[in-house]
Amino acid sequence: MIMRPGQQLLLPANPGFIWFSLFAALAFNMLLNMGLFGRAAWVPDLLAVVLVFWSVHQPLRIGVGVAFTFGLTMDVHQGALLGQHALAYTALGFLAISMHRRLLWFSVPNQAVQVLPLFVAAHVLEFLVRMAAGGTFPGLPYLLAPIIEAALWPVVSVLLLAPQRRAPNPDDNRPL
Image (cartoon, rainbow, N blue to C red; front, side):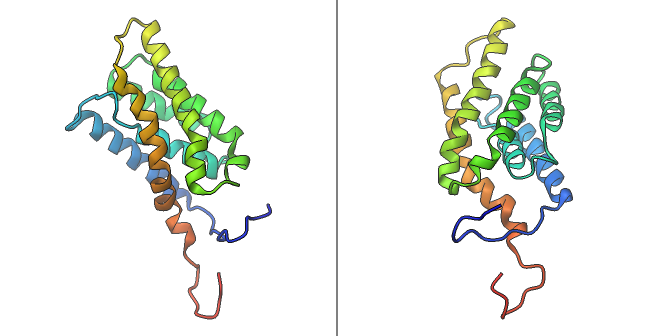
């Protein structure tokens, strides 16, 4: 793959780190749902952000099946309609994998703008499933969640790519 000018060559992603970050995002999501905010409509879905990130950067390791499994886990945790999050995460994973080659050509702030429609689509899909099952309207703050998730994209990119940016054997004479 041809790299953009100024783009740093990254080390391969450690599979243990990928899974650790996914389970940490799952745990943090669960804490956010039980914690101070409860199930506030505007709270971002951090697991969705991390799933999209790894689906874009490691599409052969993290795919639709992983997204579906984590979605079922979130459904069970929240006591939501079984398959609501699974459907949204599966759609997110599919869309992220389908656009991963194009997305990586953009800078990180532009990537955040590019993934915003993915997060909006996932929230609309969850909303439609919830409404079809007879749920209540979550209110206008529900529209803030995808915007906050897209705003978190640069932070997540820096944090999750940090282990890959280090040199395998640091040397003062090596430019990589």
